[in-house]
Length: 335
Image 1 (tube, rainbow, N blue to C red):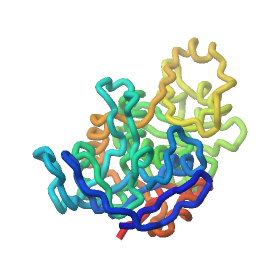
Image 2: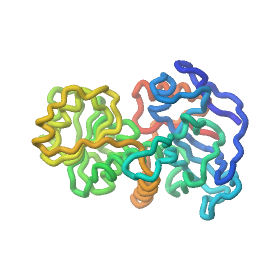
Image 3: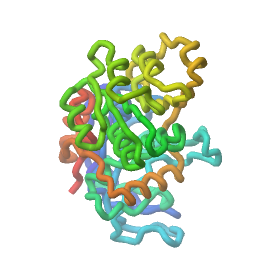
């Protein structure tokens, strides 16, 4: 079968023929129809990720159909021919508060979804919501479970609360926006692109500001009519101090990334005097994933797909992601 593989750090991915996988006990073989990109694919390509083993088929998100069952697949698993998607987070462990040391994400250290077929333990294969295409379904798993856990399991977003989602345009931030709107929160956003701010309002954002403008945090609080109960961030860095100022007393700031680097200018008094909660979050439990899918089905939510590339053009897709051009998820179509 064909797979898109990375042979060495700093090199382009290569489409090549590799042996087709065979399902073992408790496993399901999938014919993949679409796979979505995540920033971790770019970080692995650049060597900015722990535990890299090469060559490797990258890709964490995938949707397709069930091709075959291995021995001893549990009753109730999706039938052969069923439309499905994959939970990419595996072996979370027994403690729902934090992942175990054996927790892994599909695509490193194990081969991922940038291929025509993949074998996955049956417990991580879920029915694809009927209202979603394969491309839309592939855009959901990693970003969806990350956004859901950050917003609800960790930050506990409630109906009517004022929420700020930073850096809208990326897949996780857009899903966080859509999820919070679906749950009845009032959501504002930031972006470095005025066009992305306008598109976010089409998805339900009440408003937003370009973070490149001076005093954006103060002005956004005025625009929203008050400080924010919850702030969902993936950047960190020097701008995190602005989030502290924009948070309401008793507010919660949850973050799942640090693209702008360390938070070095935080003033402790602003945190403890306002009784703020700073919450770290990453990926999610199997229950988080199931609850996320339930919300998607209940609200008939559709993930935003930026662009679909053929599998053979995977390197071009990775460069588009690396350059930050996208609005939504970049997807590889697999025929």
